[in-house]
Length: 275
Image 1: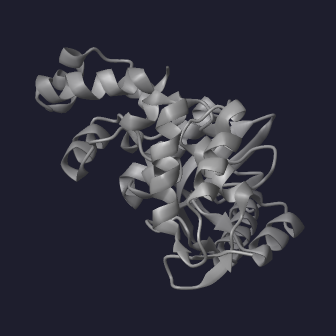
Image 2: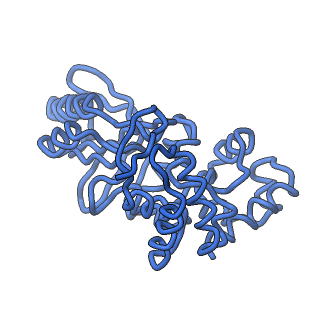
C-alpha cells in the first residue's frame, strides 16, 4: 500500500475516493473522475506529497473539463475568502441559493445578555440564527466550542422572549463552517438539534452539495482573483460567481471600480466555468 504525506507532515494511506472527490471539486463530470484517478495512480509512488497529487489532478482534469484552466479548487477558493465580511456575505448568498429566506445579522436580546449573530435564516417554518466560522486552512476540523456557544445563545434568547425582553425569537441554531466537523461536534449538534453545516455534513445539505451549482461558488474560484480584486468585489456585495455574472463588464466596473480591462477577463472566465 502506498502512502501520502500531508501538508502537516503526517502519512496516510492513498485514498482513491479522495482523488475522485477533488476532481469533482474542480468541476470534472462524474463520467471522467475515474479517469483522473487513473492518471494520478500511474504517477503515484510511496511518500508522494499531497500538493504533488493536486498538481496531477489539476493537469489531468483539464483534459476532461477545459474550464478547469480558469478555476481553482472549490474548497481552496472558499478558504481564500476573508472571515468578515467575505465569508459572512458568502454564507448568506449560499443559503439564499439553497432556498432560505435570509436577513442580515443583528443583535438578539436574551434574558441574561445580548448576542450578535451573523444572519437570520428561515426555511420550512423554522427560524434559525446563523453563526459563521471560517478557516483559511480548509483542512482543519471545526470542533465542539461553536456548538456549545450556539446552544447557550438559543436558550438565552428564547428565555428572553418568554420574559418579554425582546419581541423576536428563534427556533434553532445554525452553524456554517467551510471545514469538516469533528466527530464530537457532529454528535453534540445532533444531540441538541443544532443545524451544523460543514463541507460534507450533513449528507442532505452541505457546502459541497450546495456549490455543485457553479453560480453558488465564491468569486475566488475564478483564477486570477487576487486579494485586491476580491476586496473590491466583496465591498460591492459581489461574492458568488452568479452575482458576478449578473453584470456586464462595464456594469461591473461601475459597481466595483475595477478597471474594465480586468472585469472583461473576470466575466469571460466566469462564463467559461459554466461550460
